[in-house]
Amino acid sequence: MIGPAVLLAIGGLGALLDRPRSRRLSVAAVALPLLAVPQLGLATASLFRPLFLERYVLYSMLGLALLIGVCVGAAARAVGRRHAGAGRWVLPVAVAVAMAGLLPQSLEKRSVSSRVDDVVAVASEVRRTKEPGDAVLFLPADRRDAKSVSPGAFAGLRDIALREDPVASGTLRGVEASPGRIRAAMLRQRRIVLVTDAAAVASPVTTDRDRMKSAVLKTHFRLVADEEIRGRRLTVYERVT
Image 1 (cartoon, rainbow, N blue to C red):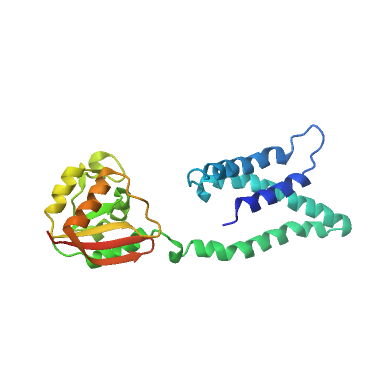
Image 2 (cartoon, rainbow, N blue to C red):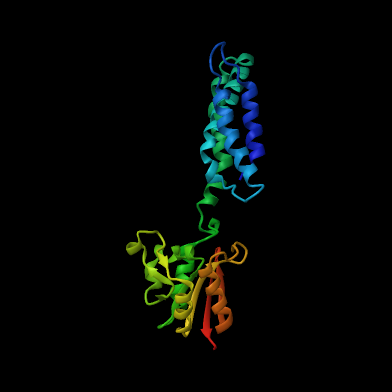
């Protein structure tokens, strides 16, 4: 990803080259704030809480595109003044160079290996690992997205923390039971399959439900299998006490 400083530098160059006719609104007057305000605002907020994701400021690239257009236009005029007729080739050449430079990155972003949280991959591992009678837990509850995407992989597993499924609750993930009910349900199990985040990207446990899941697994179960799959982690626990 190109950093905000580089994007703003390119945009600033376009703003400097923008020379509108008198009494007309310049491109830079619209495009530069559109580019700069979201980038700088989110970057500033991220100093206090990490929030900066490129999709949050994707719309600001409209401002960058306008300012790049100003740069290309200025280059075409400059070339045209020196070499008659050559200015018309500036835009096609710029487009070709941009496409050649961005194509490898575009292909890489669309490859399977670029996914940092591959829900299909972890679901496939669940299908391979599960045994008859197993229960399944998700920590945090949002990791239930793997089940939503590949329900067949979780067939036969009892989602013991779930009180209402997504259809009944009208939510994307469903509604989980209280911590006490989750604890009681866990203590009735012989084996539990846990779907969570890989250690490198896992967030601290923050809810009472998730703290209860972690505490019961640590106290009453032992780890028998542990594997990380593209940003997700699949662990299997067996009851010991």
